[in-house]
Every structure is written in structure tokens, then in C-alpha cells.
Length: 147
Image: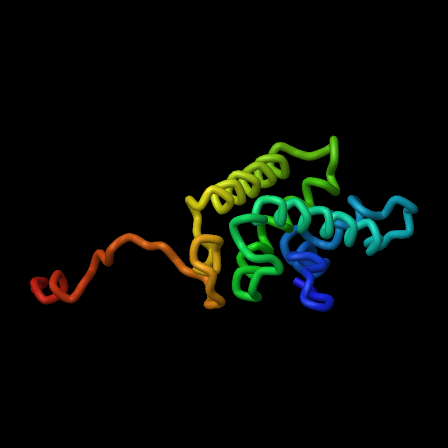
């Protein structure tokens, strides 16, 4: 996302939303004056509101503002939240489901079930994201036994 003096303006940008949902949808959602193009002010407000919602889940779990690496992981949930906010009461089932999925994922981050970074409240550090994965399936010992 864009940053001003170290503070996140938004995790997702206008181009992130256009890439994910298309120019036409965003014109329909933001163009209140009927001008035929994306109303940037409306879109930026939704993106800022979405980032504030994301930060509400992260506060107390991660140090804000988050690192660039962690911010990258927040683009999709922020985009889904902003899209839902733009739809308002006209949200389709798909839009609502993606919003609810984003919120559930953020709740998992807030509770510590999903770890985005070792820079969380319990271990203050500044390294990049941590991926939790199961033990390797095709390790050297298994490959050595294969014909």
C-alpha cells in the first residue's frame, strides 16, 4: 500500500481493486455523479476505511505500521473489505462471503492462529513474514527409498 511518513494510507490501492474486480464494476460502485469514470475520492475513502478495519484486528498483535512484507499479505483482505463497503446494502452473496472470509482470516491473525510475522506482540523483531507449514512430505529419506 501507499505510505505517508511511515503511516499506511491503505493496504490496497485503486489499481489493486481494478486488477481484481475490473474497471467497470468500480465505476458502477463509485460514480455517483454519472460521469462515467471511477470517483477516486469515493474509492480512496473505502480503501482507508478498509485499512482502518484491518488495523483494528492487528492492533495489539502486530506493531503498526506493519512491514512492507506483512502489508503485502493484507492487500487481498483489504481489497475484499473495501469492495464490500462500496457495495453497501447491494452486496452480492459472493461479495459478502469474501468480506466475511477476510474478517475471519483477520480474526485468526488477531488471535494468533495465523502468524503473519515474527514481529508479533510476543516476539518483537523486524524480520519478514513467517510461513507455518507441515513437515516436508517428500524428504530426502523418502526419495532415497524410491525406485
